[in-house]
Length: 341
Image (cartoon, rainbow, N blue to C red):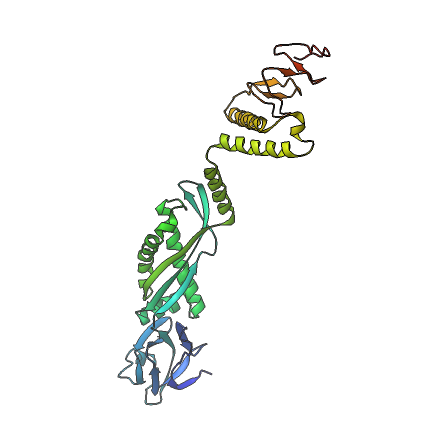
C-alpha cells in the first residue's frame, strides 16, 4: 500500500545530499490540503511517470488545485480536500557544493613532444550548484535514473574526465611543461564542461587542476632522461669514472699499484673505454684494435695505456714473459727471447 503523506518535508543535517526522494521507493499518496515544507536552499519537485511536474521554492505550501495545476490531471476521481494523488517528491539541494574531488580512475596515454609516449594521472577539485531544479530532476532522475548523491557525483566526474582527456590531447605539450599550464588547463576544461553541466540544470562554478603526474614507469623514464642530461659529456664522464676506479684499485693492496700503474693509467683507460663506446655506437663501424705488449689483450688502436693491465703503450715495452724492459719496435725480448709481437 502506498504511504499517505499529510506533511511533506526533508531535513538534511549534513547538507551534503544533492537530492532526496520521498518516498524512497515507489510512489506516495499525497492529499490535497497536505502541508509541503521546503527549507532554505531547497526546491521540491513533484515527479510522475518519468517527468518533473510542479516545482516549489522555500516556504510552507498547502497543496491545492490552485498551486499544483499540473498535478490535478493526475487525479482520476472527483477531488475534494482529501483526494490523494500518486507521485514522488524530490527535494533538491540548491546550495553550492564546494571542494568536490575529481580524478582519473585510470592513467591517460598521451603523445609527448619530448618523451614520445607518456601515461598520466590527473586530479583536481570543482564546485557546482543546481540552478534549474526541474531540469536537473528531469535529466538526472528521469534520464539517468540517478538520485543517490554518490551516483550523481560519479556521473559528473565522468563528464569532467572525458573533457579533460580531450583537452590534454589537443594541448600537445610535454609533461615537463604541464605544471606551468595548470591554470590554463583548468580554464579550458571548465569551458568544455560548462555546456554539459548546463544541460543538466547545473552551474559549474569553478574547476581546478591540482596535479598531473606520471605513472611509475613514465617517472622512471623521466628520471633516466634527467640523469643523462646531468651527465652532459658522456666521454668525459666515462674518463672520470675510469680514473676514479683505477685510483681506488691502485690504493688497494695487490691492486693495479703493484704493476706500477697510477692515476695516469686510469685516465688512459677511461679514454680508451670512451673511444670504444663512441666507435661502437656508429652504425656499421668497426673498432680498430691492437695487442697490449704486456698482457696480450686486444685494446683500442692508439691507446696510451692498457685498460686491462694498465701498462703504458709506446716507448719502452715490457716483455710479457719476464717483465723486462724491451726497446720499442723489438720483436723478441733481449732478456729471455720471448716473441713480443
